[in-house]
Amino acid sequence: MTKQYDLLVLGAGSGGIASANRAAEYGAKVAIIEDKQVGGTCVNIGCVPKKVTWYAAEVADVYQKYGQGYGFTADSVDFNYQEFLKARDGYVSRSRSSYFNGFEKRGVDLIEGRGRFISDHEIEVNGEVYRADNIIIATGKRPAPLQQVGSHLVESSDDVFAWQELPQSVVFIGAGYIAVELSQAYHALGVETHLAFRHERFLRKFDKMLTDNLMQAMEKDGPILHPKTNFTEFRKNTEGKIECLIDGQVILTVDKVVAAIGRVPNTEDIGLEKTNIQLDDSGHIQINDQHETQAKGVYAIGDVVKRVDLTPVAIRAGRQISEYLFNQADSSAIDYENIPSVIFSHPTIGTIGMTEDEAVATYGQDQIKVYTNRFYSMYASAAWHREACDFKLITLGDEEKVIGLHGIGQGVDEMIQGFGVAIKMGASKQDFDSVVAIHPTGAEEFVTMR
Image 1 (cartoon, rainbow, N blue to C red):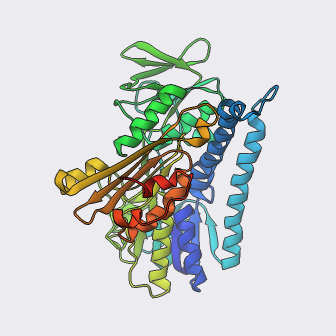
Image 2 (cartoon, one colour; image 1 turned 90 degrees about the horizontal axis):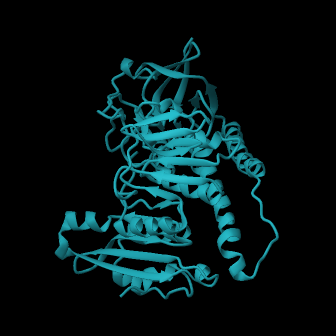
């Protein structure tokens, strides 16, 4: 017997949960289907445990780099990884539990098991069939595997959060924000850490000012960088360590190798071949501007579509679809322009809008004016350290509309959200200049540029 719902959501990650809860708040009969852990990547093996790990690395920096400069001394400061795991994993567990409470409060049915489409509007789970006129696919992504010889010895970025003991040494492979964040965090926690990437620079899609600054910081403080490095083979030696080779030559020997070379969409084995839903060449689900697939009433959001792979984006898209379906919103589309994003590096990076290179390529050099400021962190400088903080505004035309804003330095992660509001409202350089600066802060650099 087929069970009928107003909305079925395939995937209980951040986007799927937001979709289901918002629809249920408007009285819709909703079920959400998940065959792994509720909360998806972000809560279980992504942003949440990563951010807690980043906090631990920040605490380590206080002891290792800054404490003595401020007059604090201690006979011994030891890092207990097991106690850290209790804190981190306990927070993750409590976050996951809140979702179950939310489902119960709103009347959302959780169906545990592998969901597979058997038609455009029917999904089978554990032999039971569920039907809805409206379906949202939010199955997310998984780490892309390495294909080199010996790649079975290589772990993924997901595996890092299952470590019960810290390795003595590790190499992270990748040039994206996941590899950068994890390599810096585990270096701060006392692991001999390496970061290997194929080109001269990592984070190549970000403004060059940001990557140049961060690379200089890492060259000074660690982890150990290996640019222009593309391992071709991995093998285990007699001591149980992993040798990383290029063309037969051992380049590096470590306890663990972690690949963070990208992620691929979870679109296999969910029955899409039995629907009208189409995939692009990279395996992402094709959607229109309304997030609707070729199957009418079936939508897709989050990492499984080729838009912006950020948790808040999936949440916004899922909620907007539910607003459209069950609360008479005009559209299920969202604005993908000028989305603020942060890299939890050391120091942190915040960015909104176009990079300088993108702006020049789009509008021409004569239409673009760039403002920059650099200062040295008071927090670091007072403790006898030097930490360069860089800020940039990219403006367009005679009115100098701000179309790009980028910063790297302590606290940028918390200051960037408000500037995102300004840019979404179409602020100009004159609007920024009209704001009285808060002194002494890093944020004041964005409103004092000349």
